[in-house]
Image (cartoon, rainbow, N blue to C red):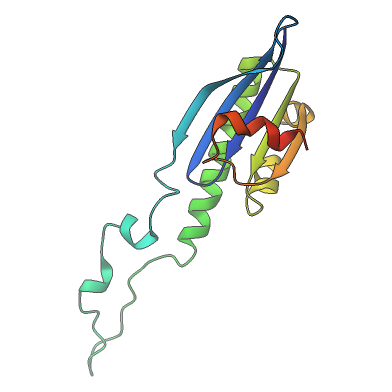
Length: 149
């Protein structure tokens, strides 16, 4: 039995499908084997921060020094990098556990290359098809057609 894994990911969603085709079957069987939503990838950054620093007076009166809120300005970028590394690690584990000879990836243009560059070399070597598309909300019956083009 030939087995392939398809992974579709964006910053908020991760889905992995097992594609199996027995010699007696006419068309391949698609089974969802893993799916999760990343809380980090959803919502506005301001909603995720708990200190609400903007609500309090910061000083800056005549005899006081102006005080910053202490927020890091690149926190959104750091959050994206963290999510991308998590996706790559999950892919590494999944591909090794599934013992498939080839697998496919669909991820948005913004994160696709970053995911691939964070993969283990042995997992990256098995990557057969890689498309830059966000397919996380596409029905599983349509997923395979995007890789057969």
